[in-house]
Amino acid sequence: MYGGHYARVPMPQYVFPGLARRWQELAPPELAGLVQMEHVEQYIDDEGIVINNYDLKPHQVYFTRHMQPGFMGTCRYDLRGPNEQVTEEAPLTVRQQLLLLAQLAFYCGVGYKTAMGIGQVRLALEKPLQTC
Image (tube, rainbow, N blue to C red; front, side, top):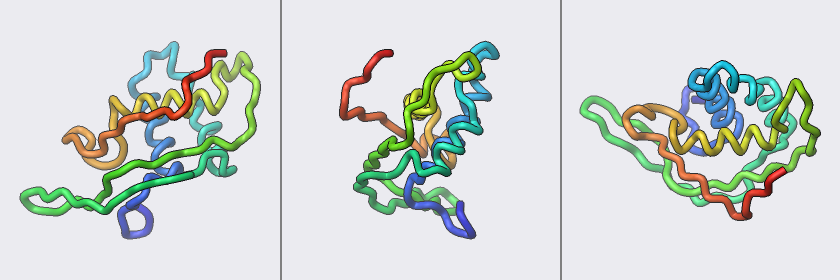
């Protein structure tokens, strides 16, 4: 939520830090350091990831006692921040970390009530992945 309202657009500053926290909770100790929350947040704050295109529609899910507002559709993110080099302290670049988190979203979901099946995500890559 921002202010007293629900976000009806998957803003990068809401989606990816939440996924990074989830990574820290789920990853085994030897892999937890692959995602560095402060680097991901700084990349987002520097507008390194932006929404390029979207086709979203408001949608509500009605529960017995309340309604949960949200949205359905597609959203494309572009990574436009600089490419940095891999170091011993950072075995993955921030771009690689964001791709890892995007793939995690399929398993964890994003947003509210993910354990109930809300916030489902499917990653659709437009370009084939390149290996380093």
